[in-house]
Length: 380
Image 1: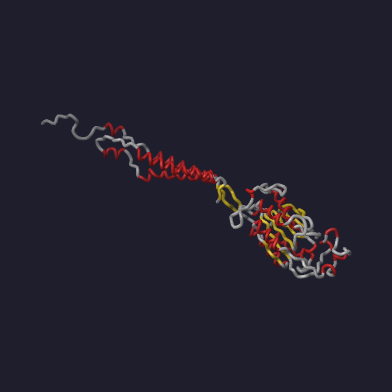
Image 2 (image 1 turned 60 degrees about the vertical axis):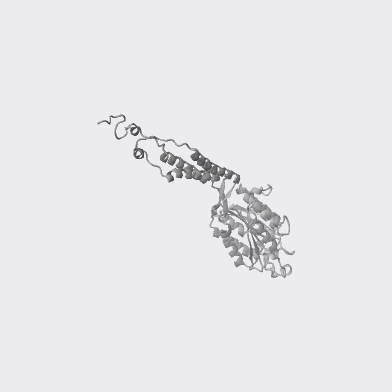
């Protein structure tokens, strides 16, 4: 639990002051002598008060002041956000290196299959958005629960030149900002209040999450680490996935997997067949794991490595267990105020009921003393 206004706890000083004042008043209280002819009559007429009945109202009222002071400090508790309140932005690398056949039949086909399984596994309960990036990043599908729309977009992925990982993160941030008012867009400076706590300390994260799947390194646009700092300032976690191997492999894509029908070589049309010689024969695509790990570390996410289709599918399938239903701070001051009010009312009621004034009934005061009348002639 955290406090928004911790300085309000200074109100707790009232409790020891009141207890000290009560002790001082009891010490200086005057003692009145009551002249009665029979103490037994007074005890019979006025109910006694035990010490615990005198102390319980004081204890309850002191506890009420404590809870009211804590409520004034605006305590916040971390609660789990339900899955239907979460948006997942899936940013998929569609650079030309995704045509590499080190993962059969090629990387982009394997990524499409894993993404489809990921979407189906969510069952339409979580909003999923789709961002694709090569030389530029584009919002392909805004966060939605429409699985048919998402699956259709996945099937239509096309490769292009370049890799803009940082821009993909910024595009995902802006997509989240459209639906989450607590997340400012990238054109607006995020306040320090929105920033998560340092590593190792409890942090407040937004329920929305970004997942970046890439097989290479950033080649243009904003640096991924810079973009990660923007996400961190908004409380957004970024999970990164490095896909593919470091083994040389031909790059083969079908015609409908290449944007605008372009190809690596001069003979664009034949790239859609079984192109594997020439340009793609011994190419190695290195994954910038250091940067991907840094992005995940800065934002409070995690980095995963997948070298084949099965590993990629396992990573995407297990991801929701890491970020769906994340912790989010909710103010609970109303409960402290309510409990403090109830305790104060109980203290007043019990005080009025148990601490009545000890007045002597008139019938007792008027009753003549037992024994011989005053001034009676005692002579024989």
